[in-house]
Image: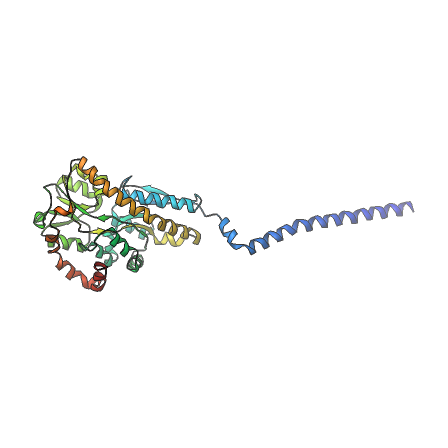
Length: 356
C-alpha cells in the first residue's frame, strides 16, 4: 500500500508539472499573436516605423562653395537627411570635379555618377526642346520664368529629356539671366560685339544668336572658360553675376553688361538607373527633398545675384545696367533665330511662353 501511495503521489506530481509547462507555453504564445494582430490593424504606424536603408549619393556641382548651386544643394541635402532620419545623404564635389556639364550628364546616363547640377544649356544634346530656353529675350523676369518651369511645359520637357538621356530631372531651380562680361570695354549696343570671340555653350540656338549679332561664337566647355579668357582664346562670355564672381572672372575681365538676353533654368539631376534601383520609400524621400529645395534655391540665387553686383564693383569691374543698354538693337537682330527654330520648338508653344 505504501508503495502504491508513493507511485500515485509521483504520478500526481508529474501531471501538475506538465500542466504548469503547458500554461507557460500558452502565455508566451498569446502576446506574439496579439502583436501580429496589432501590426495588421495599424499599417500606417508600421510604415512610419520602418527604417530606410543607408545610402550616400555623390553629386557634382558645376560651381564652387557658396555659389547659388551650393545654396540649392545644401538645402536638398538638409531635407534628404531630415526626411530619412539621417539614413540618406550627399557627398558634394565642387567645380566640375567630374568634368563639364555634358560629361556629367553622360556619366549619369550610364550610371557612373549619381547626381549633378547643371544649367539647361547642355541638355539640348539629348532633347532639342531644351534649347528653347536659349532663345534670346524669351522671359521678362524671374516670376515669368518660374511660371513656365512649374507648368505642364516643364513637366513635358523633363519627361522627354529623361527618356532620351536616362537622366532624371528632380527640380527646376534657376540660373537667371546670363549677363555679358568682356575685356575690351562696356557693351551697350549690338555693334559693340561685332567680330567678338564669345564663348557659347554647345547648342545651335546660342551659336545662331551670336552669329545674328555679328559676333564670333566659340563653343567651349565650362571648365575651360577661365583659361580661355585669360589666354585670349575668347574675349567675352555670358553667365549669372554670382558665377562671374565665384569663378573669379574679375581677374581676367573688366566689364559686365546686364543684357537680359538668355534666362536659363538650373537643374538638379539624378541617374535614372540609380533612381529606379531605390526602394519606393527612398524614391519618395528623394522627390520630396528635391521639391522642398526649389523655393530656397531660387530665392538664394536672387539674393546672391543682387549681392554680386556690389562685390564685382569692389573687385574693380565696371557694371553697365540694363537701362543703359540699347536692348532693342540686339532684339532687332534675332528675329531670324526665332524664324528658324519656331518650327522645331513649336511656334504656338513659343508664343504662349512669350505672351504668358
